[in-house]
Amino acid sequence: MKGTMLYGPGDVRFEELDMPEIVEPTDAIIRVSVTCVCGSDLWPFRGLQPMNGPTPMGHEYCGVVEEVGKDVTSVKPGQFVIGSFATSDNHCPNCTYGYHSSCTQREFITRAQAPYLRVPLADGTLVPTPEMPSEDMMPGLLTTSDVLGTGWYAADAANVKPGVTAVVVGDGAVGLMATLSAKQMGAERIIVMSRNPARQALAREFGATDIVEERGDEGVARILDMTKGIGADSVLECVGTQQSMQQAIRTTRRGGYTSYVGVPHGVELSGQEMFFSHIHLHGGPAPVRKYLPELIKLVLDEVIDPGKVFDLVLPLEQVAEGYKAMDERRAIKALLRP
Image (cartoon, rainbow, N blue to C red; front, side, top):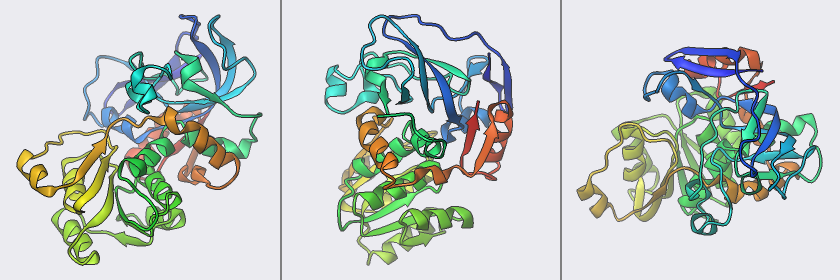
């Protein structure tokens, strides 16, 4: 089969790879129905994250089970399944506490931008749908594998609940999913920080009540002005830069909650500032498996339509164009069809 490899900054290739095989008795092999390019894939693509040689890419996926190892009991060939970017056994102490992305047996999925994928710890990682979903459901279900699950975690970790004022820092796919999630959790006011008209429009469709275009100190001042100098109850940081993190912390009210789900690059926190900010800070890799059953149901019941975040659809062999379009901000998120 052919799959996606990143050779270096800007160098994405679709080339011959070995077909995945069952390695452990807890593995499953799935035929990928849809996959996509993640915003976090752009860090190494831009040369901002070190690589150890050519790297297989892709960690968002859903598809049909082709084969299972002898110890797999919860999924079977022919079922449509969605899995997280981080594998989990679903029963270790970390999983039991709800942090599946820190499972003691965790592996990160890295080969999903391909027609077939080996998924370790299949019983604890994959969630089947009740029946084979229709084609028009595929984009929404794919978001549950990472980007929606991460946005949901951003809202959950920031303690979004009915009546709060929430600020979303970042208008990428995760920020937009965080906006949708905050709306579902009952936020009364959702302020999204964005400078892109198309993304602003989708943010409003997902529940944003206000848009702020300022960044950095100006962005902080604008949020404080909008909240009568107090700050927001919940701030969801969805970028991963020093500026976005500082902006999030400084717009959170005393006693409020800041979540961070953007993979940090060059982020450093001041102990002195954190001590006197009096905020709750919570984040990390999203425990997507924790939320998968709920999110899958919301999509299948058509309560939410997160698939709208995909504004570019390409055949998988054109994956390099997907990376380029997202890097140049011509696309929010590229969906790939094998």
